[in-house]
Image (cartoon, rainbow, N blue to C red):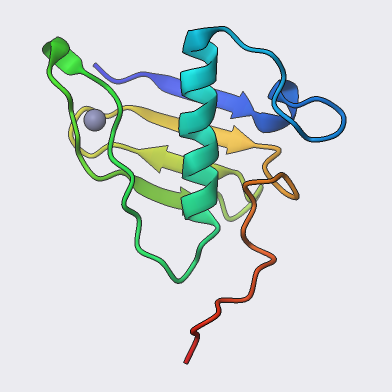
Length: 107
Ligand SMILES: [Zn+2]
């Protein structure tokens, strides 16, 4: 069974944009979400992020599907194997938002 996460990155950030103090588990999740945002906003680069879940205590390790909600621009992800899925709002203009960067080797 998959889980559904719905998070807003701004809830985990201090006013200056640094991550707030989190529990070790919270920290791991936060790093996962920010990596999803980072990959989602590198439009030219293929996704390389693997599912972090361990159904039945075995790493799922499946390539995630990452895309945008066309209405809200939330980042959405899901795992086609274990159906872990989630939504990330509030990522714009955070440290992990790469969308303002021009691809350096665009042809
Ligand atoms: Zn999975």
